[in-house]
Amino acid sequence: MSDVDASRTLTILTGPTAVGKTALALAWARAHDAEIVSCDSTLVYRGMDIATAKPTPAEREQVPHHLIDVSPVSRQLSVVDYLELARRAVADIHARGKRVLVTGGSGFYLKGFLAAVADDIPVPDEVRESVARLESAEGLPGLLRRLREVSPDTGRLDTMNPRRVARALERSLASGRSVAELERDFLKKPGVFDAFPRRVILLERARESLHTRIAVRTRQMLDDGLVAEIERLIPEGLEQNPSAAGAIGTREVLQMLRGELSPAELEAAINQATRRLVAKQRKWFRHQLSPDQVIDLDADEGATGKF
Image (tube, rainbow, N blue to C red):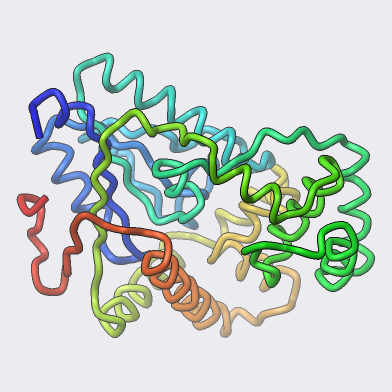
């Protein structure tokens, strides 16, 4: 790879929650005169600092970070919004002669650096509202029933994910086309970052190692004031944003505050939910990602010079 190619390459550092991305990203960015573009669907929300294990102010002083604290907690940031912000950030970093390190583990955001992830079908407000009413009244079974009426062929849609099913129904109703037809057209779309060379580094650890790190992380979050942070964000509209309110740690604290979990159950519930997320992330990495390199951090903590 030429020096010009290296300077334009988007180095993407990913891996499951609690694997150790932040420390390695900071070290690599310092070593390569790079700036970090966060690829995390919760770090975008202002005020969710403890809940998202956000890089500290001291860490962000070491290396400039982008796409952190870009949205109020009350406003759900769509992947389209995120990718436009990411496009601008990458252009800005390159314009100043710096390299780009994309860091995070949110699959849908991550995929946006590698392929097209959003179509351009306009969905009228009345369609969104009708789908929302159906979901409120009948839940996922009602959404699936209606979707199969308008689109018997649902393609590769994850029919166990209510949000994905609702979005698929909206697009089918708005376009008059089946999910499979829309999917075929979508696969032909160019990605936002197709013009850039990309290098994907996947960080891993053994399952037991990750579970230990998750437990330490959860305990630290609670000691640092996670519950008080969530209580402070509720009046700011946290519960009206499903992405923010559904984030692990935040969701369990909200359940406790509603009396659905006891304080004694909170820590275990967060640990269990985080372990489930890690299992889901690792499955996504196996099926959706083709990394250029995999680094086992249990075997090599000081891996900065290895990619």
